[in-house]
Amino acid sequence: MELLDDSVVPEEARDIKQEAREFAEEHIAPNAEEYYRTGDYPHEILEAGQEANLVAQDIPEEWGGRGLSLHELLAMTEEFYRADAGIALTLQLASFGCEILYDHGNEEQKEEYLRPVAEGDQISGLAVSEPETGSDLSGVSTFAEKDGDEYVINGEKYWIGNGVEADWITLYARTDDSDNRYGNHTLFIVPTDIDGYEAEHIPEKMGFRASKQAHITFDDARIPEENVIGFEGNGFLMLAEFFNMGRVVVAGHGLGLAAAAIEEAWDFTHEREQFGRPVSEFQAVQHGLADMLIEFESARALTWRAADKVANHEDSGYWAAMAKTKATETAVDCAEQGMQFHGGRSVLTDRRISRVYRDVRIPVIYEGASEVQRNLVYGQRPGT
Ligand SMILES: Cc1cc2nc3c(=O)[nH]c(=O)nc-3n(C[C@H](O)[C@H](O)[C@H](O)COP(=O)(O)OP(=O)(O)OC[C@H]3O[C@@H](n4cnc5c(N)ncnc54)[C@H](O)[C@@H]3O)c2cc1C
Image (cartoon, rainbow, N blue to C red):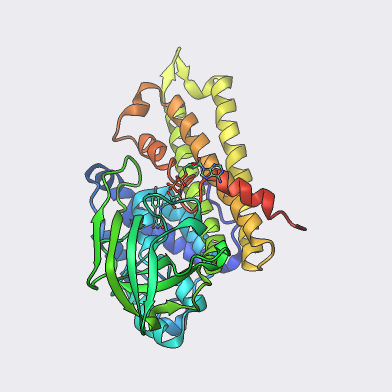
């Protein structure tokens, strides 16, 4: 069964989709179980992805990347997450936050920080969430205080992809305490080797185990004022714009995971026999499989529509939130049904379905929990 077919993918994104599929079949899928079990960081697969020009390649050509479009990123994402979500996240997080820099940074910043990521010599990260603040982006408290021609940073960040491994991160920090909640934050480039930057891995996770997140502490960490991205006070708006694109890509995480769940459920129910016949011959099972397909195709149609809307800057917040919610929740539902159809074998930890079942819990949370997405869908509906 070909779930991630080309028909919904625009012509421009089909070549990269094929490249991503071949890479996923060779490098991601065969290693998924092992990295899930060990929880190791997949250095070798990341290097292979960099060599294959499939990592950080949304960075524009003038800074060393391929300038992949949102549609190309989405096509690649579906394929990678179908093969394994944890490894896929590591590949994608290698350039997390770079979009903000190439959209809003100055020429010197782009030359110094983007090019090494595009060329596979460095990796980045994006530090927004904190131990006490996740969903409320305007409430984060890590403070960057101006001191002459420098900023002095104090505070903590939590859940930060590559916080330990990255060469530099994009930091979202408070620079003001005014009543304008949306004008109090600024984005900075922060090299991870400066004094006052400490990072350690957070405890082991049940899902996405081949990706690494960190708890970062800033203790009087100093950066030059040249490291401000855009201008002071504009961080919230830049981040909101970035998340519109990011959430379409996270919808792709959901589609890849849902496809994996359906494939596993389909194969198992057609092979497993009870009462003298494959369990797929029972109508209840057929209806369950049909519902998975209906939800998957709905989510996929919506996601590709949202990609068009976001690429054209048409009600981006609304469409991105809607696609992320639908596709990531579809992955949860398909994994749940897939587990039920596996009977007792569902809970064997080396089964793909049990890995998918654990992984699907995460995209419904990161880049904004589903409840927050529903707030956005309601609040940003077209015409308001
Ligand atoms: C594997 C993983 C990787 C991540 N990577 C990164 C990263 O690289 N960089 C980064 O900055 N962050 C990252 N995050 C953090 C992620 O973005 C946050 O976990 C997410 O935004 C939710 O924040 P929280 O966990 O603090 O939950 P909270 O904000 O505490 O929310 C808890 C729950 O409360 C409910 N809730 C919250 N607000 C509302 C509301 N307004 N209305 C209704 N219900 C609500 C929801 O059910 C929500 O799940 C990552 C998280 C995970 C799990």
